[in-house]
Image (cartoon, rainbow, N blue to C red):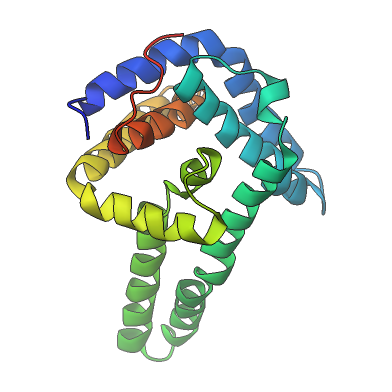
Length: 213
């Protein structure tokens, strides 16, 4: 990775966010609103809106600006990002979810066994979230297909775990600060994070990314 500190990456993410805030906040709020639509809301968000938000953040990080037309412009890419998350959480994530479910059932009858299953399940789920973050950017950059993106994400994170974990902790800290302002701060922190993570990905893979909006 190039010599870019986490604080510098957040600074760049903030500058880029200021020039693209309407798109990023708009997609974030729209995703939240649509998710409340019964039956189809979650599908619309999962298949189109969330992948478009991820792509918008990646394009902002890569080229400094993006538009709704660019974010939604390549449906095949959006579907690939959707399938990636589908595989990561519904297939690979099935084991930890089952462990957690069985753990909750057993905790009433056999506290020791139930607690162990819960702990293992949550740890596995945490690892999936922790190591699977870079996959969508590998797909969007053309570096990997859907399945190889999983391996690339885990490998990239393992090789740069210290730097990534520091970035993860900084994100958690900012999210907590944002939530303290009656949640209003999250309308900045959450959309801005969609620029920060691809900036981190680009830095870890040896690319510069955009430095300003």
